[in-house]
Amino acid sequence: MKGKTMSLTIGTLEKAKGIGVCILPAKEATARTKKSSSKKRILNALEQRGGLSIEDELRRRGVSSEKGSVHILSITGESPLLGIIVGFWSDSSQPGASEDRLHPESSDEQSRWGFVRRLAIAASKQAKEWKAGDIAVHASVFQNDAVKESQVFYETLLLSQYAFDRYQDLPKKRRKGVSAPRVLFEKIKGLTLKHLSQVEGKVSGVNFARDLVNTPAGDLGPYDLARQAQSLRSGGSLQVKTLKVSELEKKKMNGILSVGRASKKPPAFITLRYQPTSQKRKKFPVIGLVGKGVTFDSGGLSIKTGTGMETMKCDMAGAAAVLGVFHALRSLRLPIEVRGYVPTAENMIHGNALRPGDVIQMMSGKTVEVLNTDAEGRLLLADALHYASKDGCDIIIDLATLTGACVVALGEECAGLYANNSELKGRLLCASGAAGERLWHMPLLQNYKKLLQSPIADIKNIGSRGGGSITAALFLEHFIGDVLWAHLDIAGPAFTTSGDEAGIKGGTGFGVRTILAYIEQLVSE
Ligand code: BES
Ligand code: ZN
Ligand code: ZN
Image 1 (cartoon, rainbow, N blue to C red):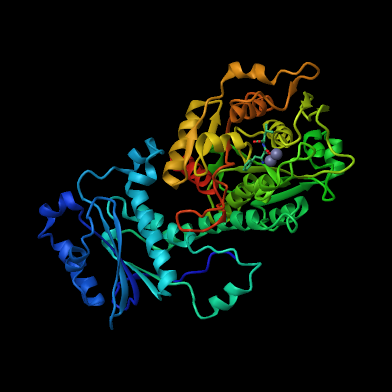
Image 2 (image 1 turned 90 degrees about the horizontal axis):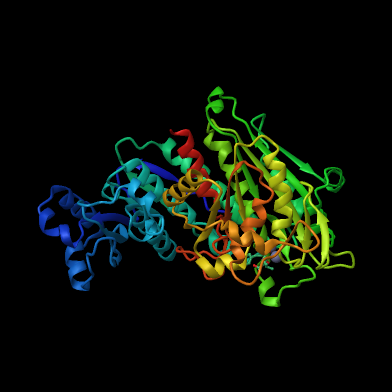
C-alpha cells in the first residue's frame, strides 16, 4: 500500500548505480548541435558510467531520434549503470508551459511537460524491472523552467511507485529484498530540496485518495470515510466535523438520507475547513470543494448488472479527491481558505429502500421525483451543494463519479468539466493542463432543463436517453444558487481496470493535482 518512500539527493551523479536519464537533441536539431559541448558532456558522463557509446548503440538499434521519443538502452557487462533512458527533444521551438495550459487536450502528448512525465515513467518502470538502486537524472533533462520541470519529473516518479498491496501477501515477501530506488538529481540552478518536498506533499495527497478508492466497500463505509477525514485534523488550521443521521434529519438533508437509508451503514455529512493563520488569506476567495462519497453503488432498486457493480467501490472517488487535497494542504501551507463538503452514503437494497417514483424534499426545499435510484449521486450532492452555497463559499467545485454517459462521451482518461462561469472554467482547464490530468469542457445547455420536468414534483432525477452527463450537471445546477460553480464528472478517469500510463490499476486520485494546481495558481497571482 502507498508509495514507497524514495531517498533523494541533489548533487553529482558520480556514485550512481542503476539507471541514468538524459535528453539528447532531436533529429531536426542534431545537425545544429552536433558539436555542442553540452551534448558531449552528457554523452561522456553517461558513457563512462555505462561503458558504452550511446550514439553507436542508438545507431545499431536504428532507433528514431524524433522529438518526444523515449528509448531504453540496457547495458550488459560490468558497468555501474544498468541502463540509460534517452529522450529526444530539440532545443528550438519548445512549446512553453503557458502554451500547454491553453491546450489541455494535447498537453500530455505533445508538450514538454508530458515528455518529462513519459521519461519519468520509463525510468520508474525500468527501475522496478531491473531492481535498480539509483535513478540518476542528468541536468539535461530539465530545460525551460528547470525547477518546475524537475518537480514534474519527481512527482511522476513518485506517483509511478505506488502500489496497493494491503490485501496481498506476495508483494510483502517480494518487497523484502527490494527497496525503492534512490533518486539522484544533478545540481540544477535554483532547485532545492524544499521544492521537491512540496512535491512529496502533493503525491501523499494523491496516494491518500488512491488508498481510499482502492479499499473495498466492505471495509470502507460512510463512517470509515468520516474517520479517515478526522485523521487529517491538524492543530487549529484544519478542522473536520461529521454530521450523523440525527443531525441530517434536523437539517432535512433528505437527499443524503434517502440514498443511504437501505444500508446497514448509516450515511453522514463530513465538513472540513482549512483556515491558514496568514492574514493574506483575505485577499483570496473562499473555495468550497464538494465530493461524491457513495462508498458503494449497487444502483438501489434500479439495480445495476453484476459487471456494472464490479468497480462501484470507486463511487466515492470525488470524496477521496477532496480529502486528498486537504491532506496535501496541510503540508503545502497555502494562504487560502478551503472548505470541504462530503456527503457519504451506501446505495443498497432493503425493504425500506428508496423506490422509483418516490418524491423527496431536498434540504433546499425543492421536491424531486426519483425515477431511477441509480441516479443517486445527484441526490446527495444536491444537499451538499445547497449547504456549501449557504456556508459562505465564493467558489464551489464539485468532483463526482456521476454518469456513465460522461464515460461514453470522453472515455476513461478524461473528465468532463461544467461551470456556470467561463473564467472559472478557463482556470480549471489551465490547472488540469499544468497537472497532467485530462479534463474537457462540456456545455450546461439550458434548453435541456426541460428534460428534467416532472409532472408531480419540481424536478425529476433523470433526463431522457441522450445527454445524460449534461442533464446530471443541470440537475446539480438547481441547488447551487448564484455562487460561482464548477462540476467535474470524473466517472471515467477516477478508476482504471486496465492500468494508467505507469501500469498501475485501480484508484487514480484523479482531481487532486488539478485542484491543487488551481489553488496554487490563485495564490501565485
Ligand atoms: N456511479 C454511477 C456512475 C458511474 C458509472 C461511475 C461508471 C463510474 C463508472 C452513477 O451513480 C450512475 O449509476 N449513474 C447512472 C445514471 C442514470 C441512471 C441516469 C448512469 O450513468 O447510468
Ligand atoms: Zn448510481
Ligand atoms: Zn453512483
